[in-house]
Image (cartoon, rainbow over all chains, first blue to last red; front, side, top):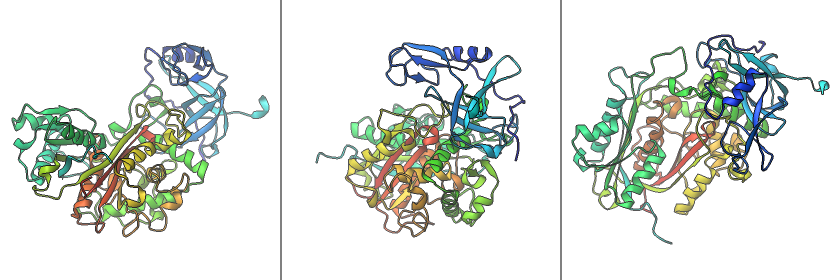
Length: 143
Length: 390
């Protein structure tokens, strides 16, 4: 067993697009933001110009609870580049507001990951001011 | 029935250049050009007969170096879309004889990292260590969770395809086997559930095809092969967004990303009035072992969730009812970057239908199905080829 930890090497940083800038600005404040549609009320990610459900352009950035469950997972043992320390665990998280995002699971043993695992966001600052959203297991009793 | 929309075109020439882990004597342009010249020669044609070209790099060098301009040209992505576009261009009269060529050489030199084309730099994937194996693993793991698909089934696919390459003298990994499913499971883990031998290799090489008008195809050097059906299912850019099995499309739960290729297969079969039971050989795109299981389900060869059982018991191997990826595919034949290998499923299907495969020839094959892409990349292309003019 190996503890899954945040990456500390010179990993590739996200470069915000004109659409995604609010997401990354939110990260720096410790907020996980997503786009909610003013017309149908549903959520959209990755950042978009139109609602994924109804096509409306009336999207508003709002904070997520940061809580969700693991929808799917993998544990990587051969890294993308040597900048990554293995093992690391890419996951797709299903957030409470009904949207999915890609992230990494941290804070547990590598063999503790499974579909349906309750998780919560943790913010991991990188060297140059960029903050990554990771997820860690959460205790259901806290809620 | 109205006449088949692609009945006026046929595939008349094919060529794989030499394939290898690294081709230091070539670059991507020259290796594609070598394949192009080979495909034209295979057809019994000369470069002057080509009046349409699909591709970039070496494909356009072919135009200039042979001084065959002006020609009709398109930049359609290589693989099945290019073959469908070439046939459509001939049907529409844009050109009479179309070359498709692609290649990669001298590019994969930094071995500490995964191959450059496997790790795009988009903001919502790169920082999380994503590359193709992890993308496809997220699709496979979800299917395993929902349907109970086992690593043994994945390993059976990998062993079958790798053994096809083991016996193929033209495969980059010729002689590397034979493999049992246990050998696959014993190889080191890359991205759970994928072991090293569940994954495509990385290599270099070129590939080219030539299509001509059906009226003249019968008089050329090799038997013509016809495009019976084809279509493509795309859900957005590859490796930029979460590769979710349940990524919704237009609202039909049977057409979510996890079933990419289902609509394309249905349209392809409908074009020719055939079904899965009519297919003699399955030249399916095999970036990772699980993808073959998913494709058998998506294309309608078995029900959702039954692909894991379907691939057991010899069904997809030599002498089986649905032999799959008979040259060794991306796992053992070659995986030359982003373009050439997409043409190699159609190419192998042509070789099967001509009856000229030196290894793993499916006797009497008349209908071949080929594919490209996969749900981890948010697209799947499908095409059905046959010996009989539709």
